[in-house]
Length: 454
Image (cartoon, rainbow, N blue to C red; front, side, top):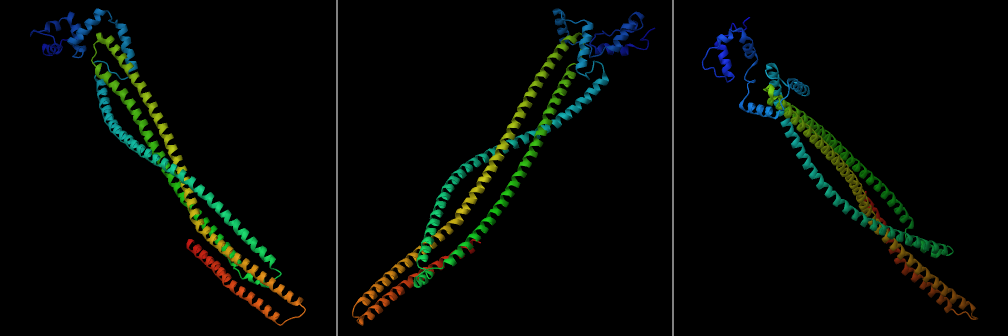
């Protein structure tokens, strides 16, 4: 049966011209109508096209392979093609128009995805730049915090020394006050038998008022310190809450950035694989059967390159994870330094506040103790003078009684002694009144200081 009975030169001659065959303007209808040539020409007309025709370069390469003796047998060639198709699924064979359309559609989709990944890469690059800027700012802040920490340590050492000196001074003042009170009590115990000395002793100063004012000052001081420390604790809790919120925001940003980096790395890996598949498709879409061995070698080299790129990507992922861990460690160190600095600042503010509050109180107590010492010394001198005068008067009276003849002038001597004793007491009263007024003035000043501090 003639397969080309309906084919004429108008269809067959353009077909030969597309393959680069010179027809010399001759007719081939006799061959198309000949049953001996009809089968061969029919197979050529159905299976041959421009993709099957060898170019000059392909002919040269085929000749070189044939000279080297590396030309594969049809069975080996079919096995190589089957392995390539199994390794790269979706790779179209020459002449498969439907598969080529699918590959073109997939290529367009991959190009669209490439543009999307490029935009995503720009966003990730901006995030990385922002992260670097934040890192620089954090480095500056850590440097400042270290300097402030060193300064706080120095201030803490100075304040501790100053507090120790103030404590020693308070102890000395307290000891001196105890000594003064002990002297006063001793003098009071000695003057219990003499009514005049007891009256003068009670007139020296307002000990009860001083004791009451001291207790009132202590209660107000404790209340003020308690309120101040409570407010400090509230401020510290607010600062701690702000630090916790900042840490939570940093963790959330870190998680988003890590997720974006992971997505970007995965997308880059997928893109590399798709690009490799696309390159293989573009390079091997028109392969002649004689070039399968060379194509297989090129495919193997391409696969090796892809494996190398995969190992490089794994190393990059490990480096990125290591940098991420280092950043987390640095962030934890920064948070610890900030917390320690906040605690040191609170201690410094508390010590400064105690120093500022206790200094006026110490000065006030020192003034009161000095006035009390002056009053006690004046009272002791007055008591000694009175005792001496009384002793002299008693001695003169005894001497006048022991005489055989009592003269009237003895009464005059006794009256003179009494007058001298009264003069000494009159001279001592202004000093005692001045000491009492000074003690009252100190109590008033202490009360004003407490009201101002409250």
